[in-house]
Amino acid sequence: MEYVIEAQDIWKRFRLFHDRAPTLKERVLFSHRRKYDDLWVLKGVDLKVERGKTIGLIGQNGSGKSTLLKLMTRILYPDRGGIQIRGKVSSLLELGAGFHPDFSGIENIYMNAAIFGLTKKDIDRKLDEIISFSELEEFIDSPVRTYSSGMYMRLAFSIAINVEPDVLLVDEILAVGDESFQKKCLNKMKSFKSLGVTTVIVSHSMSQLEMLCDELVWLHEGKIVRKGIASEVIDDYRVTMFGKENLRLEAENRQKAERSPEMIIGDGVVSENNPEFENESTFPQSIDEKRRWGNGAVNINEVVMLDNSGQSRFTFESGQPCTIQMLCKINKSISNLVFGIAIYRNDDIWCYGSNTFIDRYPVDVEKLGDEVVVRANIEKLNLVEGEYYLNVASSDGLGTQYDYWARSVIFNMYSHIKDVGVCRLDHQWEVFQALKGEHVI
Ligand SMILES: Nc1ncnc2c1ncn2[C@@H]1O[C@H](COP(=O)(O)OP(=O)(O)OP(=O)(O)O)[C@@H](O)[C@H]1O
Image (tube, rainbow, N blue to C red; front, side, top):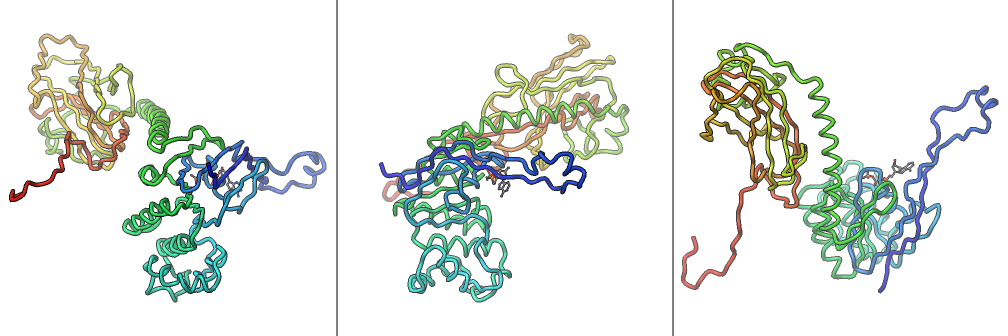
């Protein structure tokens, strides 16, 4: 097997120097004190990449991805271990790195391509292609300091791919630029694979990585924690990230519960002033600072979202079951009782709402004691990936809210399927050849 990149037991540290210069007294008293701290960013990384493979580096901010890439380009050197790269390396690391701001696009092409090892003759031959790929014909004689970040990226990418590299190193650069240019770059990188170019990409875009990479390497605190087929590593990574997200949301929800809004007692908020809330089946369109109101005849004391093992969660996988559970207290004698739920996306898009009246579920107040458990069992929570919040309500079904609790739970959805919009509609595709003479409408 031919390895183009071989990194053995790479260790890399940065020295973080203390900001403040010591006083004379401190210098005398604490002369032995160090003026810096060592930050070990890579801790024993081993990596081998075969010729023609595309590898992605993933991991949280600060996990060491860019540092590893910089070691491959020899912008940085390891403190321990070694890296061998076979062939001509071309890289897209920091936007516009290597460009001179006062030089024109053309001048920068010559300068930059020369750094990648092309002769003037080579560049003359490639110039038209570089300019046309960048789509910067109009601006190519202007100094690059006048370029937007997207234009910088177009020029840098165009040069990097046209220097006929054996190894291409790309750091998050595709995040800049418009969608059509991004697509063009992705296609170009895909075509590189068939030419035997070895590529290493750092990105936070899992969809781009899944599309491009044969393998992913997951770095965590300077160590490789997982390496393997892109889709499998992404699945594991997501589960871990969403686990962390669940903890964050748990803390956020707990904090929120501690300063849980007092219910505004009385009808004022609900009825005349706010006609939009008059009918209990009409949930408010926009909830601002008023998170809780009602006349207090029924209190919703607790709201949780449970997974299928009955565990309270703040993160759900799309399509999995979920139970919304409310614990309520009936404080007064009432003749009608309706419970409702509404789900909003975090940009206030109302995704779903229903209540026991709409669903024709009879709530028999006579037979209920004063402590009530309410459950809305959702067979498949078919919301697409994103952050949502849950509103719950109890009312008389005729326009009077007993307790309306907006944003009672903030929760996250994640999904292996990258569909878009709000909810997933169950569907199957069919694509087949039309029979001759048959009209396809
Ligand atoms: N030149 C430097 N001097 C000091 N510390 C540095 C330097 N470059 C990087 N670091 C630190 O090294 C750690 C790893 O940085 P690196 O850029 O490799 O992370 P990353 O995984 O690429 O993160 P991100 O996803 O945010 O780009 C970070 O804590 C960063 O602050």
